[in-house]
Length: 129
Image (tube, rainbow, N blue to C red; front, side, top):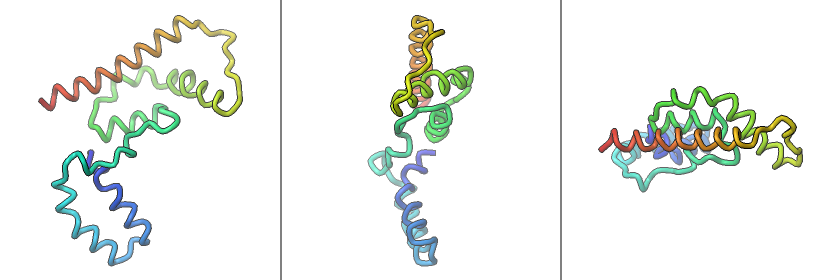
């Protein structure tokens, strides 16, 4: 799935050249080099968080990295509403409604979510050793 990252510039070139016959031939001609590329050829923008690492973006990244998304499923709504939603509101000048906030619960949730994401990376590394 990381080939999506390696092919990113080629995909953009196809689009920029309106999928012309010449662009398609160039794409195919470069195919072998891309299939045999190393990690240095990857376009990290494909898995960057950007401004909001919401559930949709996190699931796209997990798919590209071939990570198991199942452990993250239970955090989906709270991740988007609480973490990403609050951050988005603050970034756009809207104070979040913190009237019912249990700060200890929020910190525990955030810490636990980070541990689950880190475990996904660690598991993937161990599987590939």
